[in-house]
Image 1 (cartoon, rainbow, N blue to C red):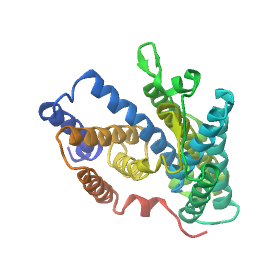
Image 2: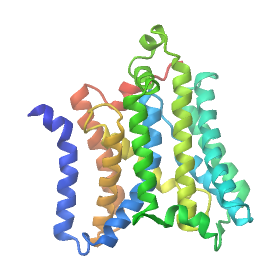
Image 3: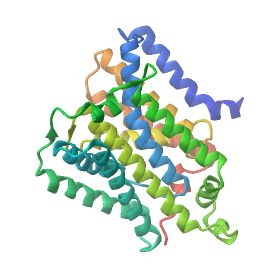
Image 4: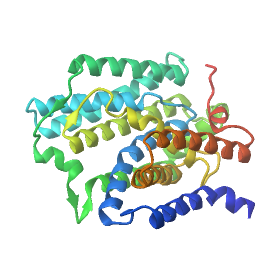
Length: 319
């Protein structure tokens, strides 16, 4: 019973939260509201999946939100200027990949702890975003061929939901069913042992951080397409929620370990929580208060099961 509670207790609590809002919040169960929750989950979920992939290798990427904002600005600037949408999309994804690769090089070549390296890249990304826009957002009537990436539907399903499902499935397959995924996990669980076993651990860290940047780039493209605008800092609201989703996900399914199903379910739970509080008429600041409580509680739950807080367990600050 203890094992079942440790593995699925948080997920069951999330389902209970959903049921509670369904019974108490007006229009919570309407198709329009559920679709809204799922669409909002897409942005958070993809960004958090990138954070999860970095944490799998015992590295932390604090630049994901600022990199996503910069990639959105790059994408928006090109679309606003009349560039073909597919080029703008590639540029946005490329911006995220380049930033992720820069994080990887700083961590593995320059031997800068990821906490510091990604903060530095975040500051650079923020500055570049403001330099490109001069603080003014790119807004306009953008081509449907671009906005449809996020706003459209495929076989009756919102494209945003399909992007999230595809990203989550690909990340799960990578981690659980590929040789590369096994090497990523081994690097994060026991860096030195993995190196002695012949695994190129530094390369694994570079790959993981690059994948985190790619997820940030994809989030940026979807944000810009959904909002028909791009501005510095536009992804910042998702930053703490992404961390909370990863930490909350580490308290379910695979307690103490970053895992894709846990991150995905946690992202959905957080968006359910925010949506339900709004529908119940709660003041805006309650979302921040509850978010902070969730972060503390999820770390405490993981620490109870593993003997130490997940970030302390996973991260190595000595280079």
